[in-house]
Length: 305
Image (cartoon, rainbow, N blue to C red; front, side, top):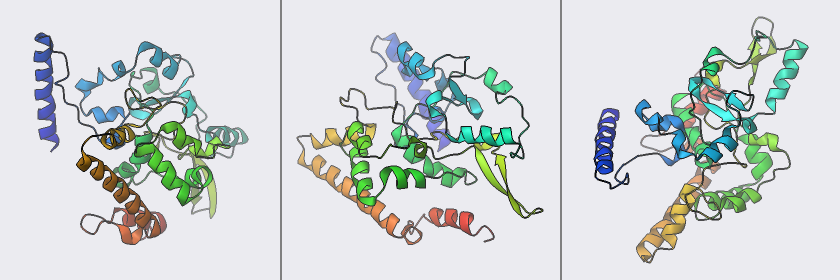
């Protein structure tokens, strides 16, 4: 499938070139993306497409999002991924405290900026609400060693299943981002982060827990926090809507009753499916190709199995 997709992109780029030569423009260019990958530079698939990635931002947007290129305004990750300074985790402060007290066991005490960061590319991960929730799938499938915690966000910010339903519906089924975010309790923004740079490690020799800094290869998380200050929105949506919500709103405004009914059924299916999974996660896995949630549960709670 990957080979076929690459051949398709190659063909479409050639078509785009012909369109430019004929003065038609670039509307004929096809770019496929999973909405769960919105904002992720790796979703460009091929390096040949990366040169166009940063051109999605206007110059003013680049300056506001990135700040000083060589200053301390960006938090860098491996593989050239970097995020703006407002992605700074409160756990970084605790990491500094542990480092200063000498409690941190695997810290070399060196500069946090590596040689890779000095030659960092201009590619960034654009903050995306769809990607924040959608990255769970990638973690379960491809990086089960990652430890992320959505619990604090759900428990402290969302707070209840009823609020979750209204929050989720506003985000992805015709509502606006402002209304969805206004339903959250943001009195403590530390719960917006789902990933900590600190690891609690069990030392079998001493029989005690130790505080460690996570290894660099575990830092490559697309969206470590729920974005509320800056995020991708559907083009032309005022007030701002997510891409998914904008599509739903357009379908609901269609003159075709069949499209409106399809949208309503899709929304109800999604909400019912979420409710079923929350009620019994282990028994709600897909009967044909599922088992991934249960496997993740075994890895976390019964590693010996």
